[in-house]
Image 1: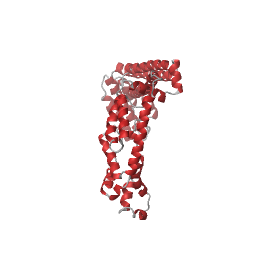
Image 2: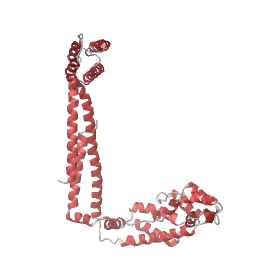
Image 3: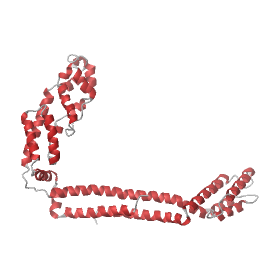
Image 4: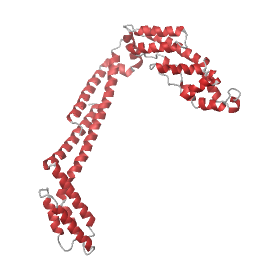
Length: 377
């Protein structure tokens, strides 16, 4: 038995035990009647409250007023109890014991002992609540184990699917055009950032808000407004970042208001430095055919604003590849080569992964059945 199966068996066993314990207490309460148990619990609580309040005060030759007060209060309490209250005789017995001229500590101790069976019945309510909480915790443990197992199954199924890939497929037919495009767009973007004005550069980034598959972070509104409304906005972004390092006196030679530049550029320096061409690249291994077709459509609209025709043409070539029937076969082969480790390849070839999948699926079925058999409270 594997460690994962043993862990699942443990949480299922804990759930079954917790459910049995809860049902045992719930059945005891049902046997006596819920309302009757609650009535006994209320009476026992009232009785013990009186005992705790007057024990020591109404005993011996101490506080006579407290002695009278206790006798009257306890007698009135017992008189008001329903005739058919379970363990009513125990309450009556204690009242009779207190009906004398002087009380001692032993009288209070004996009363508590006499009321113990009523207390045991009353305790069933708290016991049921405690066991219900234990049951909920045990059920959560099974649910958490199931979630962990689902993640494991997803991973095993991913590996299994990759194992079906044709590792002899000519993945270079995809890799070469994608790498060529990624290189071109990275170079074109770097040139654009280096040579275009910050106003134009951030304007392009802001434009991508209309293209959700081109995932640039939008420029901060105050930074965008600053470069659009000041003369220094005509400088490239790298120059603005360089200016942010200047002392105010040196910066005064380049801009009209050094403090304004530092307030807008220095504050957002990390944002500016993080901008790169990654949202424009395809990457490797490539996405699914549908994802690539839709993304390439948006990329053409963005890349065409700053890159040369060769770069756009390279992107269109990739979009054409995504329409070919062989694309998914090549992509799966690329993913298998890129993602499968040596250990995973060995498990696939030896059949170990199939056995792991069968075991995990059976384990999942046991956990799901345990949750079905033990519903939430």
